[in-house]
Length: 324
Figure 1 (cartoon, helix red, strand yellow):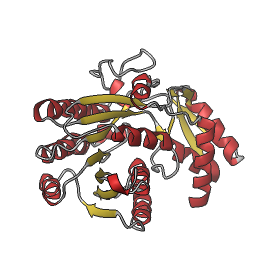
Figure 2: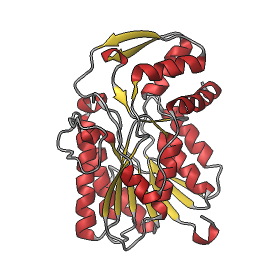
Figure 3: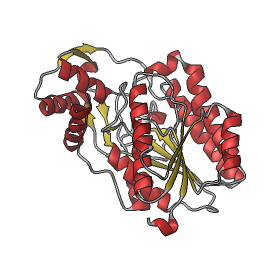
Figure 4: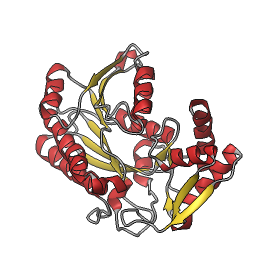
């Protein structure tokens, strides 16, 4: 993408892990990025500040502190700007915490998403938004494919993401809005959130502290390196056009399963240290396994995530040691 066809992009959740990586990508390709975030105070708040400071060194980046739960603020944003593309990543994340704070999860992930869709009714700007592999819930047929039912979520977080997908279909069908939902599979990499397992494992092993593994570390996950997520979104957005009102869903995952204990062993090797492990029984909200069928993604963009877990962990290790 060059300056002759640069886009004006709205990126929600720009201070987040994936949001920051996406902003860097689109800015490097000559686009203008209007980034919004509510900068919610949590364990990763200092990372959010660092990410925004990094982005503000780039001339084509504008940041506005806006909470998508505030319908009037979102509406006002669309009154002041016309966008070519919307990348919607703002959300409350995390499975276990969602049961305790369900009202805010639903308010953010469902109502907030609805505010964004509603504000876009007139512009009908193409939207790509982050869903989650957690929507597959109690499905046990692996790998997960986009045509499987998502009516059995195991957590409030999963239910909120499934609800957002249903809203997306509604707005696409009834208001002629191009919307693409992307089901992310266990994303990790540099600048990951402090509440994510990969960061927690790196931190604890480096400091000689205990880590907790559920079901003896036998839970299976499809770990996906963040650069592969970013490249997939970038390629999809180049094929998403205004006026092509359609609702689409794609898995974005590596397509391979790894045991959580194997993830820990790779981190041990990368740090040259041994983990102190405590085993616990899995909680009900956790899925036993995830694995993405990415055939539809590959058919669409001729690209599929390919970074191996060992490669991704070494890249994450380099970032962790330079920022710890």
